[in-house]
Amino acid sequence: MQNTPRGMRLHIGIFGKRNVGKSFILNSLTNQNISIVSDVAGTTTDPVEKAMELLPVGPVLFVDTAGIDDEGKLGEMRVQKTMKILDRTDLAIIVSEGSCWNKFEKELYEEFTKRDIPVIPVFNKSDLGIINDENITEIKNLKLNPIITSAKNFEGINDLKKEIIKLAPDEILNTPSIVSDLVPAGEMAVLVVPIDLEAPKGRLILPQIQTIRDLLDNDSVSLVVKERELKDALSMLNKPPHLVITDSQAFLKVSADVPREVKLTSFSILFARFKGDLSEFVRGATSIDSLKPGDRILVCESCTHHAIGDDIGRVKIPRWLTQYVGGKLEFEHYAGHDFPENILDYKLIIHCGACMTNRREILSRIMRSKEAGVPITNYGLAIAYSLGIFERALEPFPLAKQIYEESRQGKI
Figure 1 (tube, rainbow, N blue to C red):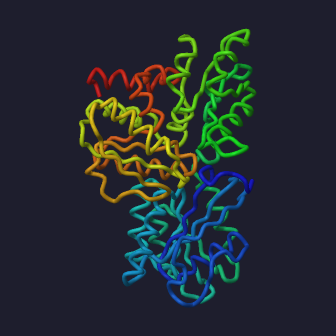
Figure 2 (figure 1 turned 45 degrees about the vertical axis):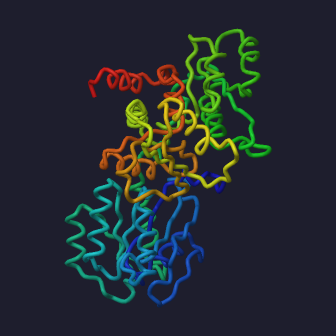
Figure 3 (figure 1 turned 90 degrees about the horizontal axis):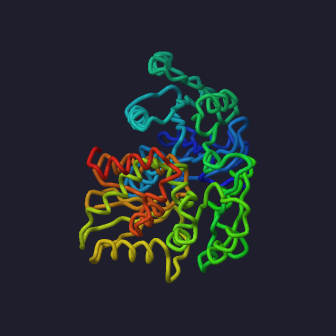
């Protein structure tokens, strides 16, 4: 369970003002001294993360944050880091001292409500006897269940765990499939896995591993080959595979080697729906036709790997899009959890497959792009579009293909 990738864990953010006991709450939930605790306000500066198993939810990631009321220049920077955690929070715990529910708590609650994120209000330090019944009633009127704790004495922590389990989003308890809904049990999927300079030595990359596991869990058959061996491997089969999945970088060669009647897509496109919103990414890809030389493109990666000379996000995608547009485009790159505050100057956002982050963060970025009116897509879809094989890559996804066709006809 400890090997579960962070992007597959339920992200539980712990928020509140300084010195209300957020770090005590984290330490009590995990039964470990993860965060430093003291009576000095502002002890927690950077977000502190702890991965653990919380049954029956499964793998979770707790994130302790700096006080939302921090002051001064450094305090403002800490608050900015805290606010970034909202983008990847699946479930929020708002901690206050006693039963305080004032400006900061209300603003946090309103922001989480706007994002459709479940909230658990926790009134800590009950051992000090400062619980206000009127504030408790106010919270209950919001249809929230206030949890009263004394984290220092481990009181109320089991009630908090029960509430976390109760409010855990359904998609966490019932994890959506990556590909198994596309390949029936007993049928075969061929996975094309190039081994290049960016491939980690001695192992496959995370999307490939997760896709194989999803197929095995569904009792489907998986055949893994490199792109150079694909054609020979297909000729050895006594019947065509149900689906071929390729690394997006090998789309052109694989498309040429796979018979037209066999469905084809890429790992990145599978993850466009698994970690994001495939329909919205498809709409975003169609905006490539409206790009003009000089336009600014934002490229986002969820990991911070060391880029090589022929990096997909920094070299290959810019090259293919430049060739498609017929003129130079301006590309800017962001990695990890960094995302620009102002995205209005970009004509398109292209995101990686997001294997290293959770779905909530990608949906938050999609929401921001929609609010700003900036189209967003992902690596696999942008590559397929620029290489002229977009429709074929969408054949396994009838609804997404219909959205593309309607977009081309000007219906949406």
